[in-house]
Image (cartoon, rainbow, N blue to C red; front, side, top):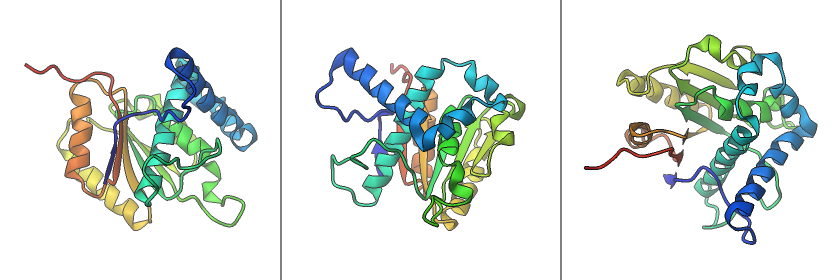
Length: 225
């Protein structure tokens, strides 16, 4: 089991400071816009994504793509990739056989992007092979506030739950078991988790051993006295 405590993978040794951050943000944004000849970006412009569009979209897309890229690297390492190596040398993004759990997802942009980037999964990748991914968002927001989960493809789902509830552990453990039976590797992600929510994400990871990896990018951590 692996732990990746960083939402963004920095793979340019030549960039530094603010310029490096701008380079990485632009790289992830370009990856999304150009993916599948712009089909994923076109989907994000749909009316069902109206709430997503009201966000600081450029910043949010680059951060979510950073998290998804970290998930890709985590899966690569779980399969036995060399330490320090990159999942792919070229600037491409692709997940395969992944069950992604986005804890405290807000409007679920990370899972929405993951689903949009793999919308051809219900068919195949052009070579007769399905990527076999599923993306789950969990937050307290009411389902009607995230309509892109209600109208999109079958590779994503939104759960309106209190992540501090003890009953969520049993529910999530059952979902994880179902996804394992479908040949998917469960990866937990948490971006901008505040205070005890980061600790809660780690607790989920520790208490559900079937979750094979975690990508955590905390906003802040609880104060210690």
